[in-house]
Structure formats: C-alpha cells, structure tokens
Length: 167
Image (cartoon, rainbow, N blue to C red):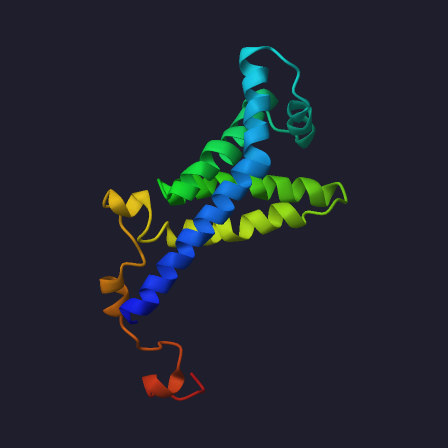
C-alpha cells in the first residue's frame, strides 16, 4: 500500500473520530452528563434512571451515570483519539443497549445503530496516525511503514495455493 493510500485512510479515521465523537457528545452526551451531574450532586430526579431500571440493570443510578459518562467523556476521548479502542468499547456497549432498548419497545433504533457502526470500526482500527494515541506512541494498525510491508498474498485464493478445488 502506498503512503498516499495510508494517508487517506488515516485522514478518514480522523474525520470519522471527530464526526462521531463530537456529534455524539454535542447531540446526546452533553445533556446526559448534565442530567447525571444534577442527579449525583444536587439530588435532582433524573428520568433516565427509570429507563435504565426498566431495562433490568442492577443499581440503575450507577449504570445511568456510566451511560452518561460513556456518551460524554467516552465520545470526547474517541474524538481526541485517546485510548480510542477502550473508549469506543464503552460507547459501543452503550449503543448496543440503546439499540436493543429501542427495538424491544418497537421504536426506531436507527440513530443508535448509526452511532454504533462507526464506533465498532474505531474499536477495530484504533484512532490512526492522527490521534493522541499515536502521538503518545501507542501501537497503531495504520502506520504507513507497516501497511506498506504487509504481505499481499491472498490466502483465500485456491489458484495461488496450487490446491485442488475439492479440498
């Protein structure tokens, strides 16, 4: 793979991280974090705790706060590319629960699923070259020198393995 292609892949990962991370934070996480803050430190009622209790999670207040932290701080970590895979895994769990909840109530799960899909992608790829993980020396899958030196043999092609198709 050429360094130009690796550059494009890493710019794509940067764009994906920023769009999903900042979008989730601004459109959902910020409000959930404010609700969690008021619930924890001011004793205000937070309707989201009742939703989490209805799902059947033990300690619904704790899990509601965890979901709020996932959608807020987790999404900001994804956007920054800091501990990308770990943060994305927490966000993914939250989006899986949200998707399941919406489906079980006969509601549209489209938005949760649309957040889940790129988050799963970032769990697999990491933040890429243009992330804080990379700046701090964390292992990266998309380093141009590693990608360019990767073997190009197609192991699934029978003709290249010289084996009969009946095996």
